[in-house]
Image 1 (cartoon, rainbow, N blue to C red):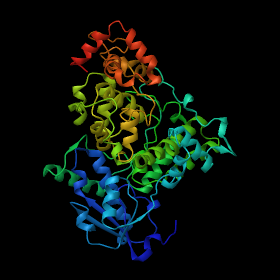
Image 2 (image 1 turned 90 degrees about the vertical axis):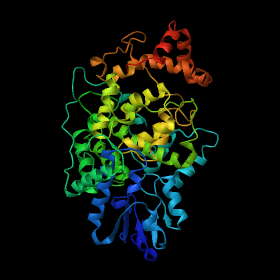
Image 3 (image 1 turned 180 degrees about the vertical axis):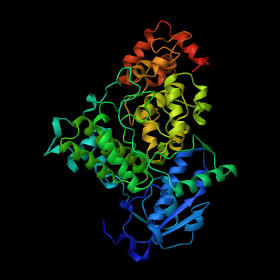
Image 4 (image 1 turned 135 degrees about the horizontal axis):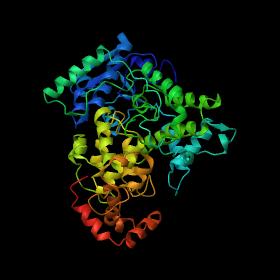
Length: 496
């Protein structure tokens, strides 16, 4: 990228909360706008609001005299009437529409391994075929040379997911890894905390969840420290245990880098090259490195591109399973006291404390529960955006509407990610301390996930009967001798 790109025509570059790192800075004058209305649209996790404000204010402090920093109610108070602004294409449909309507100069997006033009070219070659993430991932590997030897993948396979499904160690409270490196709060964080207190007290925002301490990087330097700590302390164990859950270990071997990457603090290409270098140096196993690479250059880029490819109506126009139930209070208020099922209790409690949960907790606990109970997919999508520190409008639709809730009818995933308690029991220690039994579907101690799985299939059977991947589960449903009793039990269940 040309170093004088930001200075062309004397323009000032307006950067948003997802564009706060060096990758979005070409050396010219900058502008950051802190619009309070962004934080007041819907209830938001306190940790997320804190991280966003902290990151923007830290970036302004780094830029010094090069930045205009505005604290206003709405973007329009600063932008309307100006003709000297440029932006790197923003990360949501709403903001892209806003800047274009005001004639702001728009530069191509950044912050991903592949460009929007790259994806469009690839999608054009898939005429009549599904846009599968695995096919996209292979194309990116081949184009970038990451984990490739010539035209062949390292180790002879593109995907080592089969090697990365190890349950947690038996009778272990934690994986036994060092605690992650945590950032130290400073006077900017203190100011942010005071401002959030005032905004909530005055009724401008509704915040849920615990108040700190801040656990996620808010500056480029902090993000680099977090990356180095992951590589040194947890990368080797990331692969085997990436799907595992432990009651006493909320971070497991995960990188905790999704939030700083989504803030634009780290270039994802740099992140992946750093991890791949550990494999080439003989310091990390291929399965762990490939699994991490697939999450970044595969899944992360893929859901970004699908956000634009599928269009703005994808989020609100997809409800293939006819799910309309409102989110329960335990979700809306992050109140684990209302939940007896240990896996769901612990996941919501972890969200309350940290504003974060790893991908299996999101998919197979929170998402699985919502899928079984028919929660409205739009409301669920927005909840994931608002309650997670790494939640953004672009990252959640393919993850929630598509993969988790199957509301798109199979564009992202060929079948619903529904399961009973057996999967959770295998991949966690949650069930050992639970009042419910994952092997039981009927009775006082019937697991709400196990019984809920069959009640879910009963509800959606007419909508899924032509899905060949659901033929076996639906055949099992039809053979279930106590089907009606299980469905009735779940319809009237009060303890969950």
